[in-house]
Image 1 (spheres, one colour):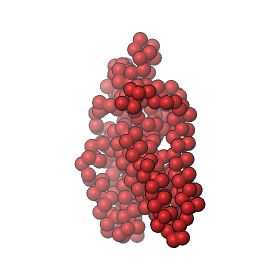
Image 2: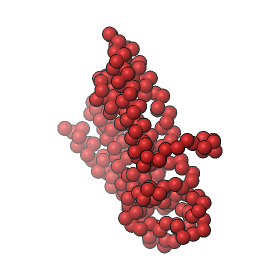
Image 3: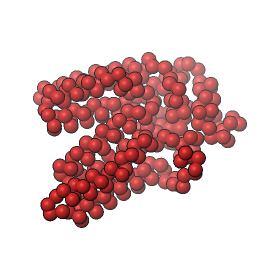
Image 4: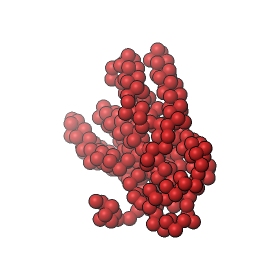
Length: 259
């Protein structure tokens, strides 16, 4: 019981600190471009360059600037360039200081779910591994970690990627201990969450079938059919999920985009 009380106190304190930080922290250099892109995503018109941010944070927080009427410089001659950084600068020039502070604060609030979920997931995993004391101490350590404190209240995808990465390995651990279609599907869902957070999470894609395959080969008797079913689930779910999250816009990447 005391472990849950400790978790509740840490999460409540962390949430309060995050809201305070979201209000008092100034706008960082890449937040305007992220915010503009997120607003356009909710209109089905997110085609700003460079297209290097997956739609995870746009889904989570893009509805806020859309509701608040974030000024989109469609009437400016530079709009035809679809240069996200330039258009974000033009957008900022159309707002006063009070509007900027209010819109960025409110847009940051939905993204606070990612550090809070990460803290909860650390607590849950530690509880299953080593009990309440370790779980509470680990959650507290995360809440006080300087790099986390520096990024968690911003309209950026760093903590979303942290959450997705941790969730993936937690579900991989769960799958290893209890392989089956349900846990394979949950592992595929965790991979989807990670991929929607940040492009660098693509490093997890080859890990997934390897985990499923090794687990099948380690069992006696070997479960090849289960391995095939699991591999299909852990790859199909993130593929079709990412396709849907990208509003079914799929094309071959150009050479300069790969570079």
